[in-house]
View (cartoon, rainbow, N blue to C red):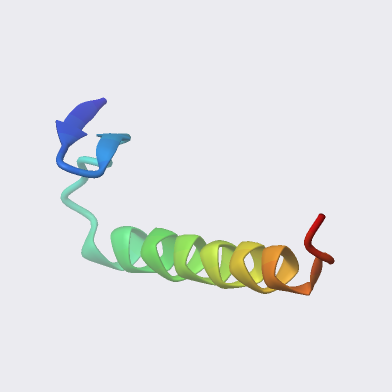
Length: 44
């Protein structure tokens, strides 16, 4: 874990750029889905 101005973040360290790119794409998709799901929920 590293501390950033936005809070703590996990770090991925690898020499395999293709693997890192795949992980980054999957994380990006997950964030997009989470954001869309949160926006679709009715506000209380």
